[in-house]
Length: 108
Length: 113
Image (cartoon, each protein chain N blue to C red):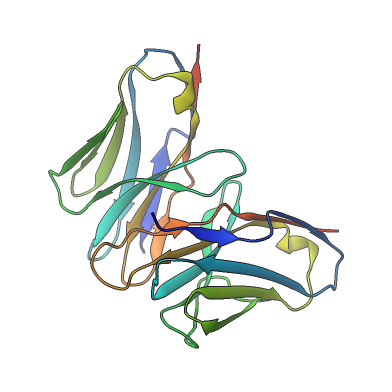
């Protein structure tokens, strides 16, 4: 069964305290893994797509990596404005399987 | 940038009412999707459409129907709203080939009393 599990469910960091979010997945025929950011009451906003093991993408303080079983979203020296829920999703044929997200809170 | 617009951000309806949620995208995307998002359950696919007048059931289609008469517009219909349909509804679109990124709208928060 295709499945995506994100951990931890919630994470509190001090400003500048780097950490990583995990996305473990099982899917037959991975076509892509996606990271989204979602602010309260809003729709998910696209961050990264990863297609194959070993691939890495970076954007400002965020870096996403991919292995055959999991992906990590590394946050370096986070700021309060990085506080959000981060969603991971994998793509099958037409369907996407979403994790339940990691709620990140960065304290000033 | 692709824009997906959900016209109703917040709705409050009574049990048994018919509810229409509208979604419009402006970048000629072939595929459109409706999800609902509930705490602890993540995003669950209700219906998707791969082209005009085409529709496919997702994982939780019961109690919902959809309409896609024009390429840019995908409507979600709750024929008789129930309290267990209180949720955040998210519309998304994508091109059918090449990049497979889903672009989401801002969401429609529906409360059924």
